[in-house]
Amino acid sequence: MASVSTDRTPVSGTGTVAGGQDSPPALAGYTLPEPLREFLPKVGWTLVSVGTFAALWEFLWFIGWADPKLLPPPHVFLGAFADQAKFFNTAQRWAIGVSPDAGPTPWQAVLITVVSSAMRVFIGITLAAILALSLGVAIRYWIVVERLTLPTVTLLSPVSPIAWLPVAIFLFGIGNAPAIFMVVIALFFHMTIATINHIDGVNRNLINVARTMGATKAQIYRRVIIPAILPGVFVILRLNLFGAWMVVLIAESTGVGYGLGQVIMLARNTFNPSLVFFCIALIGFLGFATDWAMRMTQKRVLYWVNDPSGVLRGL
Amino acid sequence: MIHRGCFVVSDNNTQTAGPAVSCRDVGKIWSAGTSRAHEALANIDLDIEPGEFVVLLGPSGCGKSTLLYLIAGLEQQTGGSLTYFGEQVKAPSPDRSLIFQETSLFPWLSVWENVSFGLQIRGESEPDRRAAAKDVLKRVGLTEAGSKRPDELSGGMRQRVAVARALAMRPRVLLMDEPFAALDVQTRQKMQDFLIDVWRDSGASVVFVTHHIDEAVALADRVCVFTSRPGRIKETVKVDLPRPRDPFSPECEALRKRLTQLLKDEVDRAFAEQEGMAEAV
Image (tube, rainbow over all chains, first blue to last red; front, side):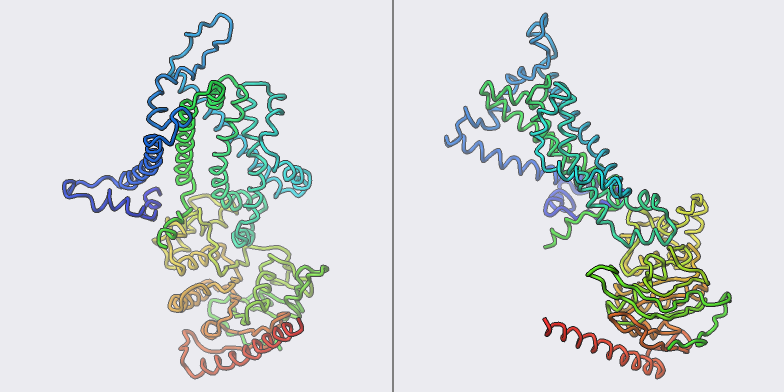
């Protein structure tokens, strides 16, 4: 299945040509395996894109426009990392009887911080997706559920997740629970409404075909409507992934023990721009990586959805 | 207005008492009882015999597709009675398969899974479904395509799969809503020949909606020409020509001329009405 879909994936512009079929004569006789031929140009262009941005920043620093104390360029904040890693201390230093030197090494601490933030995002978005999908389908399946819940859902969906922050703390105190609660509450209402919209947008013909075949309502939902809305739901999930990362930082900055949001707050309070930018770079990278993972999952699970970008490239 | 007894008995026809589908004074008003109510169909009297090929011909929006949906049981008529082998049509049934203009294959299922979708709904086991799908795909000439996905097929092949999916349910009435409208002319002619073969082979009645006169000439035992707003059967033209038909034979030319004239009056009237409405505004 994967090979079929890659056949029809649009050739990624000049990138593939450069790394692929027209490879230099020195490499003649050896062609890279196809997944690599597609993958390497993408990585290359990503590096070029980020590199250009970093180079511009470095240039502004070089001519003296970017103050390294306020806007430290990449080589400064990345270079200073060994020094900064100590701020990622996940040990309970404030607890009585714990020495400041106790706990994991700085590198382990960075890893623990990143993993715990990522786990909060992952658990939050999974819970939100399950709840929203279930409620969205239930709203369309039973009219009584729609009448009872849809007005409330619509009413609550424009409320900013920030407004829920005190509620999260009232209910769950500090720790993982309020951060996960924040992610769920930030995504749940939108995703419910989006699920309903996707159900309404299912091609009538598909439903009618199933009806003429004698399918029951439950069979139509299970075999037609749910598969038909999956691609749309997956896109919502991907879009909301970034939202989840934003919310988790806000939740963490209020103090959950450890997490990227907390490190950023620490950096703010101690006026440490290098640490801020380092965290930003880290978050950007994590967001990018999770989005990539989701796209891979999407390709695997939703093998029947075509990549439409080929049409746009042809323009 | 109805021409009865014009039906040519095909050799594999299973004679049952009475018509397969019988419409008596059938009418349909959309959004009945509201300010948006409008009449799509009125006074439809039509009998479709078992094994007969009936073409409903008319301009776009004349309600011929609505009639198809009523026969399928996907919509309920607001007047008159509609029976299938003597029983009131109340809900859709696998006995009356509907084939749509647009692709209506499930894109997440392979061809054979699409074809056996209805059998899965019935709860048949996978080996049975595979065998049935293989058999029916052979009948539509797509033996090799079973494991492909719908978007890997051409438009014509996709409609063949849609026909195969309908045939897998062994329907006694095939309802077709402009199934070849999206295909190019050459493919469409191929598909018409294909459809005639399938129809002969299956012994089912076919109700075929089109706005295409050539298609009606090539296929029909009987052509019902529709008026629009509301849809009524203006005239029923019996076609007693052997198949395959030479589209350039004098008989076909004469038929085409007659249908063109009947439709032209209708389209002229619709245009005049629309212009009148525009002036009134």
